Every structure is written in structure tokens, then in C-alpha cells.
Length: 233
Image (cartoon, rainbow, N blue to C red; front, side, top):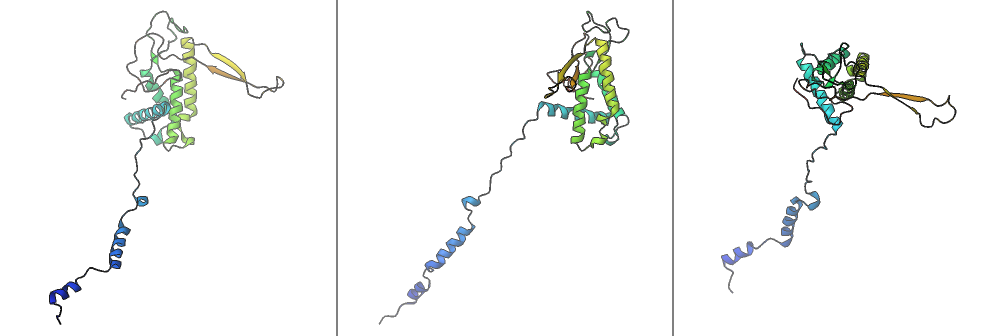
């Protein structure tokens, strides 16, 4: 009887592993392979929506005011800013104005359309200043300021704007347009219906004759369709 050789015995010991072990190794590999549901989600960085015209102008106005505080002599911190500093800022902007405001001694004082140019100064229109204060008042609170300490809402600032409006209306001969309208649902007798009076003044930043004012302030008139470009302080 022939005995198996040592080589045949080695071949028997070196036979492949049973199918169960092979299946286990394949399952372990499949556990580590990512499934379609576990694939990392792809994140797309979408650009932020463009700012509206009002928000863009408000940001420019706020940066202009902060730059003004930085260049102030001495530099002025925002926390120490008061209504008096806001009025000082508005007067500073007059040098960039485009509205001709006739002085008392000018022969065209009170003329809405003077027939010839004069040497009266150019100023910021009160409508531009009023709109500017509204934007800065909102920007102050959006940047962490408290409403009760908002310098742009100070009583002194409101009085100053009212004085600018009245003086420019007289100097330029701008008539007031008074419109009366009844409140909705007023109905009934005359005593129960209340009338609301609105006063509006037409502002033309480019009128009044005369040349430029040496620059622009970066503020916008409430009656101007296009914003005014800003210049360096």
C-alpha cells in the first residue's frame, strides 16, 4: 500500500479556508464601505442675497459717520456721541451740499427760480438730512445701541431739522402743500371725523444755479431718485 508523500500531506494542510470564514471577511469589509445613504452631504456656499437700495445706503451712511468720529479732533467714541455731535456732523456735511440757499441780503431771497446765479452758499437740502437721520437712527440700534440713548433721535436734532426746513423754505420761496384727508372709517357727522394735515416741501438738490460744492457727502435726498456718491472725509 502506497503511503501519501510528505508533499501530498502539506497540500492537504494548506487547503483554502471554509466558505464561512471567507463570507465573514467579506461582510467585515462591506461594513466599512459607505452606503449611498451615508455618503457625506455636499454643502454649497450660496452667496448672500444682495442688499436693497435702502440697506446699501444705510451702510454707507453709517460708515461715513464712523469715519467722521474717527477723524474728529479729538477722536470721539460712539458711546460718548450726543445730539450736539450729530448736529455738528450735519453742519459738516453742508460743504458737500448742492442746494442753493439764499441769504437774507440776497436779491433772490424767497425766489423759487432766480433769473441769474448768485454767490449764496450751497447747503444740504433738509429732505436729505431728514432721510439721513432716519437711516442713521436705525443703523445705531442695529449695531447694538440702545433706543433711549440714540443720539440721532435726540430732541435737539429734531429741532435743528425743523429749523433747517423752515429757513430753507423761506430762503428758496418753496410753497407748502397742505393736504387734508379723512381717516379711514371716519363716517358720520363732522365732529366725529378727524382730518390729518400733512405738510410737504418739494426739494431739488440740483437747483438754484451755481457750481458744485467741492464734493459730495454720501447722503441721499428723499426726492432724489439716485443716491449721491460718497467722498473721503
